[in-house]
Amino acid sequence: MNNETISPPAGYRAWSHADRFEHRNGPIFIHEDYNPPPKQGLLCFFAEQRHCNGGGAVHGGMLMTFADGAMFAVAHKQMQGNFGVTVTMNNEFLYPGWPGQWIHATGEVVRATKSGLIFVRGQLFTEQQTLLTFSGLLKRLNKKHS
Image 1 (spheres, rainbow, N blue to C red):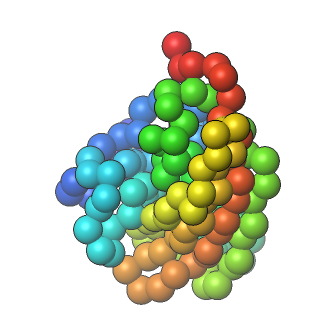
Image 2 (spheres, rainbow, N blue to C red):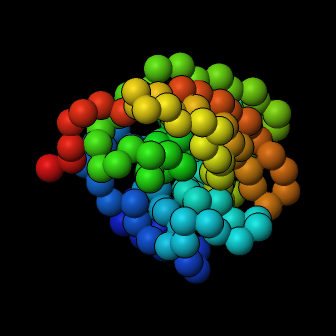
């Protein structure tokens, strides 16, 4: 498959925004319901050969890129329409992902402060297993999306 022919699973639509890096590594899809049902993530992407490392598994850098984007999707309401930056992010790799799998991301905001710090945690998973858990700290900037 290539970027132009991937159709999202039922309930998802293209996550269209101005992030050129994620666009180049996607497409990434977002669930139409902010609280998707079990076994569906807020975000997903279809793993292709181009996402893989030399061993044939989905590259850890791709999983971390996807998890970073997921933190912002999870914290969407707390971002209040502003841009933000990742301050810190921790990843724990549990299982490899493989080409031909849909990889999903889900998570939750643990805490949001008045100063714009947002603590998030979540996981990446397939139908079979959890691939990666993540936690991180985002900083909401006082700069609105245009």
